[in-house]
Amino acid sequence: MIPPEYPYTRRDLLAEPERYSYAPHRGPEFLESHRRARADLVASLGEASAQPVPRPATRPNSRPGDGGFATRDVLLWLVADRREGAADDDRDEAWTLALARRYEITKRLYCAYSDRLRPASDRFDQIESYAALAELTLDHPRAAVDLRRLNVGLKLLDLLGSVAPPAEPWSAEMVRRAVRAEGLALQRLSPVAEMAA
Amino acid sequence: MILSGVGILAVDSSRTRAYLAALADAQLTPERAIVLAGGAAPDPPPPAVPQFDAAPTALERIEDLGVPRTTLATGDVNAPEVAEEAAGCGCHTLIYSGPGGAILRRRLLGSGPRFLHVHPGRLPELRGSTTVYYDLLMRGMCSASALFLAADIDTGPVLEVRDYPAPEDRLTLDHGHDPYIRADLLVRVLRRYAASGRFEERPQPADGRTYFIAHPVLRHLVVLGARTPDDPDQEAA
Image 1 (cartoon, one colour):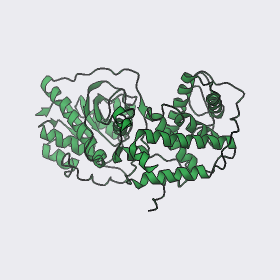
Image 2 (cartoon, chains in turn red, cyan):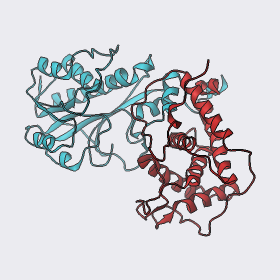
Image 3 (spheres, helix red, strand yellow):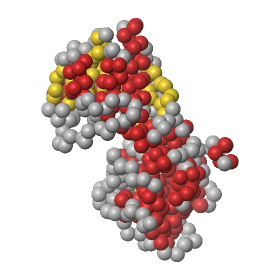
Image 4 (cartoon, one colour):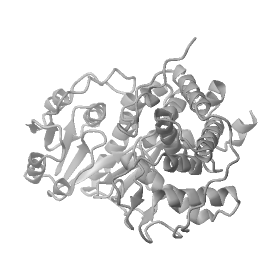
């Protein structure tokens, strides 16, 4: 049986955010439609790439709130650190959860924020920021334990599946890693997800 | 028994119907009711559930209980007329059963009465939205916390926290089990108030976790059956 179309990637979620309020129960087929939507997303990314994530010029502050910042720079620095095994766990956790919270509230990642984590830019279209936050939240040992991570990661991947795929191979690779990690976290959380996989 | 100084601020919802059914069963009657009956489009009637009789509307229940009521033609709990009515209702406490997801603004919170809310999750560990789903995913069970509302979400002083088993049929979670356990805890708190004439509260620790609306995939895992993370028995199975 062909599962119904996954409903959360049908429209451009950057242009028209999804709030997920009062989501109806759609039965076990829903999990299969989610799995297929993620497979479609990965297929749209092209070949896997070993190209490194470009490291921004400026190191992020030790925690958010110590000053204004460019979102893309912070997120790419954290991903680059993690890939090189140089991540500072406390800093990683503080930044990841703070930006995850921003995304949960507004369903957008603005290009820059003030020291009080208020948007300091009107732009929210840097796809690589969404891809980086998806990798940071999901590709982490705590993704299936701290459900704030898994929850925001699911929503970020919906957004990434609703827009044109990232152009740069290193950015596409972040999405690919996030999708793989999402699947592993869901399987760890529930035998139902395991059956759908 | 009339609950002296205690009223209810409500919309017609599964939660309000469960609250009023439980109060009627416990023979506890609020002194006043403020009913928000406006809004752009009324919600569909709650489905029948095994946990309580959800058929009578909130207004029918309130009339059966003989509670003096004011009906306001708004669905917005933060509308000025709601704060005015709360300020003049003569109650020191209003049981809060407003629209789902609404955040009370300072005008209403500062209108005079305190707002007694039952949150579906253990506080302070589970603050925020759809926490009943997170509770089931993390612990395989449900919980509820009675608290007085404060300006920051789910941070007010707590009156009681209680665990409950998961529902047998998880499809009844939203309209049956969740309202039912909240109503059960509400009655427990109000019985103690009726006996002692005061609410026993304690402040919450500042630390806590805030959760946002659970993604539909997580909700489906809850309904279709989930195990708790790191459960050694199930990991081995």
